Amino acid sequence: MTHSCILWLYHRDDDVTREHLWRCRYFNPDIAVVPLTFGAHTAPWRNEEANHILDLGFRWFASDRRIEADRYFFFEWDTLLRESVKVFYRSCWDDPVAVPQIFTPKSYPGWSHFPPVMTFDLYPLGVQGFSPHCGIMLTRDVMKACSERYQEKRFATLHGECAAGCMVLDAGFPSVEIFPKAHHFISCAPVATDREAGIWHPIKT
Image 1 (cartoon, one colour):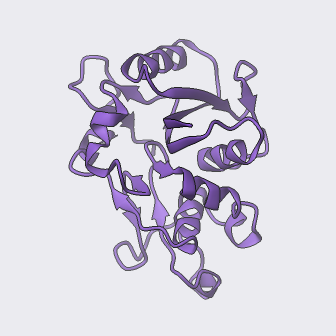
Image 2: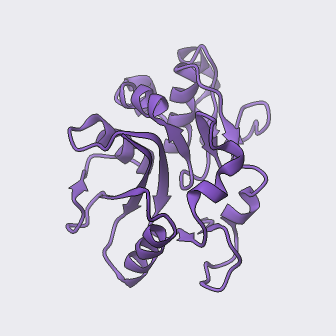
Image 3: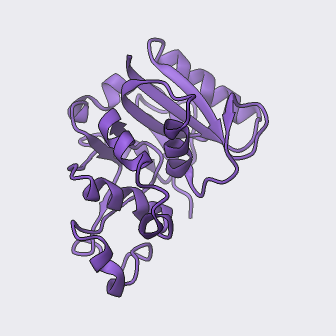
């Protein structure tokens, strides 16, 4: 078993995707990097039934192609890494779940990705969402729990931003926000190669 595994999720094989994948491997030479895709034909593993990148990762973990690791990181094709995940996630390395931002009905009552309030009783341990998906870190135990739940109707019908958060709560795992470096991750500006150290991902609207 390796200590970490990066899941590199993409939908097209172009220069930007290949450059960012190269940088991901360059800054993390001792970590397994696994390309996963919805439709591109160049990945060693693909699945066209997944609804979002976390769903794709859970399907991969549930397959016989998974790599056993202590923790898993989800990065999309347009993520620019300028330091290792060991450095970037050092403040939350031992947490079971670390995400860019956590949304709860109390902290963000008007968030559009929550299910209807009338369905909240389907989630007795609570409702929460993670956004963006890119940059989420999950330990092996959390990946296992989510891969056992993602096809349950009550989770499969949720928006992707909310499905993983609700599964994590249902499995009894606490979540933390990536801190104090989350501002390096959630960047509104276009990704550029001359940025300071960090992990950069453009917000999509």
